[in-house]
Amino acid sequence: MKVVLINLAYLSASILFIYGLKGLAHPRTAVRANQMGALGMLLAIVATLFDKNILSFEIILLGLVIGSAIGVFLALKVKMTEMPQMVALLNGFGGAASTLVGGAALIEALKMNTLGTGIAQTQFTVSTAASGLIGAVTFWGSLVAYAKLQELVKDKDIPRFAGQQIFNAVLFGLVLILSAWLVAVPSATLAYWLIVLVASVLGVSLVINIGGADMPVVIALLNSYSGLAACATGFVLNNYSLVITGSLVGASGIILSDIMCKAMNRSLINVLFGVWVPAESGPSGEQVYAGRIKSSSAEEIAMLLDGASRVIIVPGYGMAVAQAQHAVRDLVQLLETKGANVEFAIHPVAGRMPGHMNVLLAEANIPYEKVKEMDEINPSFAQTDVAIVIGANDVVNPVAQTDPKSPIAGMPVLDVISAKSVVVIKRSLSPGFAGIPNPLFAADNTVMFFADAKKGVLELVSALKEA
Amino acid sequence: MESVNLLIGTLTIFVLAMFVGAEIINKVPPTLHTPLMSGSNAISGITIVGSLISAGSKITLLTTILGLLAIIFAMINVVGGFMVTHRMLEMFQRKA
Image (tube, rainbow over the protein chains, first blue to last red):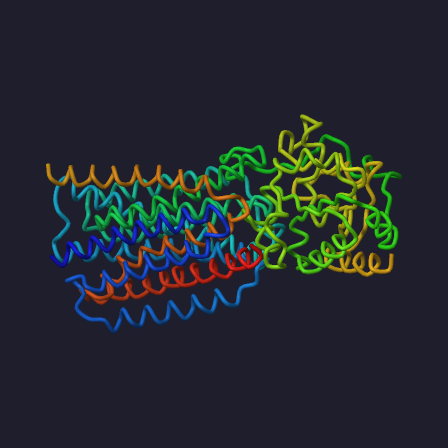
């Protein structure tokens, strides 16, 4: 009877999780949805405490207290600009938990002789191996992603060696062999820990050479892995709520990775394994920029903005790095009091994770109705007086649509160049991640404002106040 | 035979849940993609269910330690994930 009730509680938790994700379809319902998800988790945890195998609660309590304390600390301390790192870290912890549970389940099953026979045993060992593999790859991959996003390691410091792909393939092959060993001889717990070890190296090796601008894809994918790891653990424990929840998260991550890849016109394989070769052909920065760059001052730009009736702001990673979102909000309010209609154009891969820019703008109290997706806003650039690009580069590079030989050829970009005037706030002419010059900066209708995003916007605000 | 059916049952749930996930996630607007990731992250901490049993059933010292570590990791994921998602979603809501 107790088991039935516990399982019904798991079912209710799964339903609450589904509603929790469903409510994210709109900002209005999202807060409640998230609370429903949290309620589902509470229900699942409390129900589990009634499991007949649980003999004592001290260790459980200890774990719950330590984990909650760290979780609360991280959640309250993190800055909105650091959200990509935070999500990467949390992904990793989910993966680690799956790996540890898989290992514990294997040892317990051996000790208690509950391994089963035939298909049941094979299901157990295969899914245990999968928990170990996916969990460890997720954990170490996420830690590397965290270190890169937090700039603890710099892209240029990372050694590259020929045959990285072969190395990864060998590691993966090794995991398969070790898994076969575990399936054949379930009592070989050593095989499990070796799987975890090799998968850990694989996790580091897979992520370490992926560049900053590809991080949105990697984080989305690791998100998916953390779900799949939970799913595999569900197969180990024959627990439906783990399988359901893991699948939901797995599907979410896969869909987000796919959206990101489409927004860069690259395949997932290319992002993960492609070696990014900076364009050797194509024009150099000197050829594109020489004599055509018009550098402007805050006062001149303020005059341009003073008469504008429609303005579109295009934020990029530079806005996040400079923490310029609040200054941008001040600029928007000032422009609006002067009668301009101001909207934001967000490229799907702007920033370091999906939706990164939207969160920063929300933090600065900019209503989400003003924040438009690329496909929605692109046709209106032609009717726009001034487009202000803040710390973005590749996502506004017209070459993507005009030069089929360019490394970013075919990537959908924001049609900034169609605006009557373009203001680019950028520290220098240094290329973006794609390593190619941007003809937008040299266009007849573009003026450059060389400044840090925050400082630049603040100067514009004070110049505009005097205009 | 029974264990085959059990496996097929679990696989069925796995596949159907994937479809449900795809349907729901496709309706989440890009503006909420970051909270979607942190929120889905939080619920992937459901692994805590397995870790509670390992830590509480005290079968061997090693499994208890593994269970304890797993609870800590999963709980950071759960509490950190839901709270940080809440922080973000509130920012979206106050202008609505």
